[in-house]
Image (tube, rainbow, N blue to C red; front, top):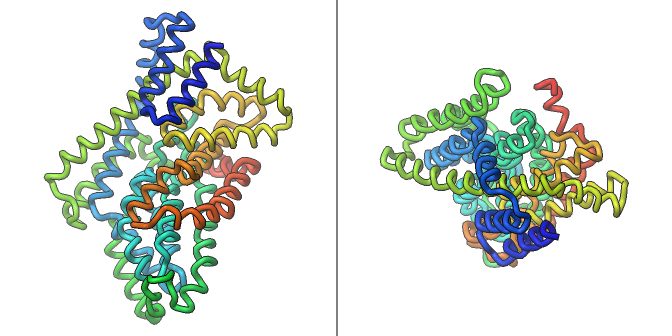
Length: 441
């Protein structure tokens, strides 16, 4: 009964807007007191769980992401992608999607991808005749590729909690991320092709830009932008190539990314100032502190859940409804989406993994396959109304009324996100193929 009350209290506190840390901590204190557990046992347990070298990658990738964001690498990535796709009608929208994927492969953050690529692309998209609502919805949806294209911050947390290979967890979401990229690009082409052909934007908006430059001029511009973009474009190769080539660990890759971003931002693209380094470190320390304290509270809470056999109880409840693995996976997906709509992706990973991973494993789902299912679900939850934090941030950044974003967002959910989620859930090879090929998982 106490566990049920604790879960209801957890949901109510999240719905009314209590900060996630205080929600986790408050429910943990309630359960410890009501179930008469010894705090002297639980408090050291939370600390011991945090005492993992893998978690050092989180603050380091946060620092790297902020340095990259301020160092002008996003502008270079957009310029290179725009020249590459410039001859396609509607290619500017694909440029935004691909740029989010490339930037995500550097920063590992959807929010960083949205703030960086969005600030660059919204003006370009508007001038090219893209309705503000569609442009904001497209970039907000594409920004979540930062969670799916490795390296991913939530996959580091998942690997830590689930005690699985972080490299395999990274790779598990790569193919689903590419599928989502293709589907979002296709939706953009279908939605905008007729509008751009006629040169008519939304009501009151500018007309489309002229046809692309001749091929020769495009090729020359592409060569110029490629040379300029090499310092930025090689960073994903350095990070991922180094990790999967066995040159350095995930933590060491985060160190390399952070150290590499400093001279590139300072002296190559000259967008980063030395005076900003202190501010970047303070912001990263603040963000890291929130994540670590939240993880500490969640570790105590998950330990109580485990000792009270909550995962088993959840599994028994689902099996009482149906013993069909297909149906159980549908219920797991619905649960993750609903919970993900209430809390951010980091909190969702911390809360959902210890509860639902044992249930998924019990029906034969590989933990690495579940990593991909969790990643796609939490990504979709970030842009699913009514909460949709990235959708609201995209609305503010793109100066687009949220009601104008709803219709294109729903189209993207039903035509891109749900097909990606279904494929990821019921075709395990999509998430397991790369770990098997690259890591012999």
